[in-house]
View 1: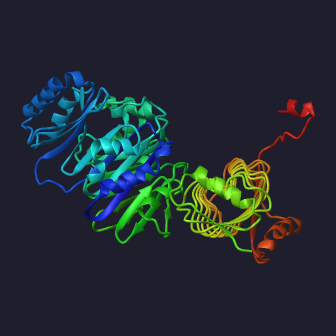
View 2 (view 1 turned 180 degrees about the horizontal axis):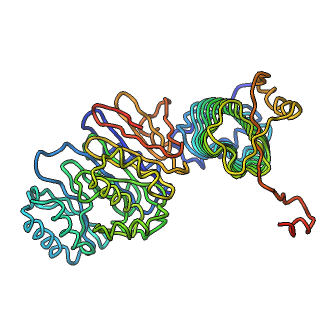
View 3 (view 1 turned 45 degrees about the vertical axis):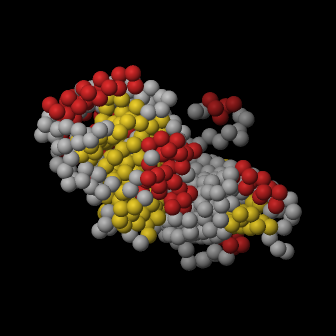
Length: 314
Length: 230
């Protein structure tokens, strides 16, 4: 099934806590893995990286190789990486790095290490935390409740098209564009057609998850010069399948829905803040009292909610 | 008679359901509060029960109803009254997608709009929506009537079987193989008989009656030659 969520605050606050509530309420929609994309207070320079390595036994060597690739591109670690491990074989890390000379070139070389170590997000403000397990377990393991930010996304995964792997969880980063994250509910039925097409165009897919396609597809559209709004609208007729997905950037959150109206989205928009989710009971975790709920349940819909200066475009 | 009050809150739904069923056995009206849009409330209620839900409920409320009278103060989520056999469900606000899905009898009355695929695969009963019905409503409806007083969205009555979709107001578009017909006075009287107990009869309505334009084979027939004609 999968469940998705989005949250926008008026000012930096406990967005991590709210996202955990939104996803905990939707845990029945996907118990395989959970993920969060949190937009914290943006940095002026440097980036925050979130990633994972797939074998604790070679962690030191893999991290050193990764750091060397950074240095090869004019960047370096600004602090000691923070490592999160548990009984699983994989480990997760958080790094702060200085600006690479060329983001695209650095990401391409870093992705050569995928299979051993992989970037899950890179941003001035974006941090993607995702792992196998339910919302509570992932939140506890990675300290998501304590994360402060202006907005974010959440996802609960029921794996339907690919394996239950930590890196196949959502959100997906629209590499190499910093600070762009995607969560998706649904199935992309022309995934292989698009994957072949985009692979031939030089893009790399790091998983077998069809949802990753949306992130790559959006990257391709942005590279071609489309705005996010244009990409959202175009995706409805370009991508086949049943889907509702949300895409987040520092400026806000956008969404698009398929032509068959199969995957729901409900929103409570109040006093400049917003909670969005696949199910109404999830947004009611954030807004307990009865109020106006906006149902985006029609076909072929898209829109954008801005942070701060709020606007809705559809 | 005073009502038995059931508070949902954050309690496990299994526990809430057990409380609701126990309350139903008292013969008193039942009032459910703090539903918080949660799912699976009021499932499989027995005949003779009078139950109301304050606020909004989530998915599947009133599913498998066998004769209860259910009132929802505000909105409901997906699949209201799914598979219900009998009874009456009233929604004060809006209904989510697929309300009345696979129902085989009874009445659903939505005072607001309803989402996509109203009455999907229904096999009997009536669904009355005072507002607009959503995309692809009437999808694969085998029998029964869907009556929309506030118009219909795109692809209305797509893949309709032997059900009927009646719309007063604009129809954004019809689905594949839909016949749009001018109803007879007798047919309108039949619909008015459904609306009359709800106080919704209006002789000025300009009805659009939709039935399937396909050649249908209904499986009541035990005549083997009917199969050979396919």
